[in-house]
Length: 420
Image (cartoon, rainbow, N blue to C red; front, side, top):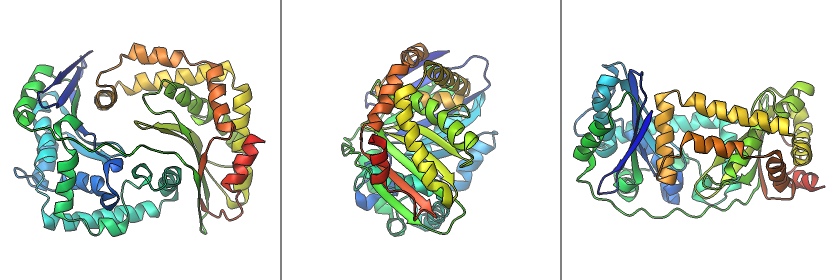
C-alpha cells in the first residue's frame, strides 16, 4: 500500500492510498469547518450546510446527485463534527472520477435554494426533536455543554431550534465564505485509486480557487460542573467527564489505553465490576475523545433510578483504584485491543480515507502505522496509573444526569469522594 500526497498552489491538499486487490474506493472531502467554527448566532449552521449540499447544485438536482452515485451501485453521505465536516462516496474502481466529480460539486456548487432551505429546515428540526427524545444521545450534548460552558466547543452540533428556525440563504453562504477555503480542505481517497489521475482532476476542479483566511477557533477551557434533568424515564443516565490530552499530545495514547482498560470492553474494569459482578446496568463504557487543543475522558452508564447513586460511587472508587493498581496485564490487553482495532479498521477503504484526511488535517503528514504502534507499545502500566491519578487528584470534572436522578450525588460530592 502506498500513501501519496500533493498540495496545489492554493493550499488544497490531496492524499491517496492505493490498496492492491480492491475493486472499490472511498473518495471524500474533509473541511476544517465544524461546530466550534461557528459564532453563537451561527450555532447549528455547519450541520445545516451539510444537509443543503445534497439539495441541488448548479449542475445537478438533488435527485440527480443521488442517482449519479446509486446508478453505479455506490453510496454517498456526509457528517458534521465539532471540528470538521466531511462529504464522501464509496464506488467501484471505474467510477472514482465520477465520485470525485459529484462530491466536489456538492461542496463547491450548492445552490442553497431558499425553497429547499425551508424543506430541509423541517428535516433538521425533526432531527433535533429526535435527539431530545433519545436520552443516551442528548446526555452527551449536555455533558459537552457543562464541560465547556459558554464556548463554541460546548455547543450542540445540531444547534438550538430557535436558531435553526431562522437561518436564511445568506447565513449559509456567509459560513461557506468564512470557512470553506481551499487550505482548509483535504481530498482523501483510498482503495482502487490512481493518485496521478486524482491530482489531475483536482487541479481542474480546485486549481483556480483562491484561499481565504479562516478565523482562529476560541481556545477551549475545560471547566466542569453539573447539569441534571429530572424526568420520569425507565433509565437513569449518568455521564462523567474529565479533561484529557489533545490529539497532538503524546499522552493521548495513555488516555486511550486507560479508557480501553477501564471501560472499553467486556474485560474492562467498569464492565466487570459494575455490570458483571453487581448487575447495576446493561450499558457502561469509557472513551477518550480529542480535539486540537483539549480532550475529554467520558464515562457513561445507564441504570435504574434506585441504583444510580451506587453506580456513581463505584465508578469513582474504580477511578481511584485504577490509580493504585492498574496492572501490566490489563494495560497489555488494552494495547492489544487498540492495535487490533486500528489495523482491522484500516482494512476498509472508507476507514483508510478517513484516517488519511484526519492525519493530514492534524499533522500535515501521514504517520506510519509502525510509528503509531510504537507509540501504543510505549505506554506503560505506570503511565496509565499516573493518568488515573491525575483524575483522582482533584481535577475538574463534569457530570450530566437525566431521568429519575433527583437523589443522585452531586458533582461536588463525587469529587470529594474522589480525593478522599
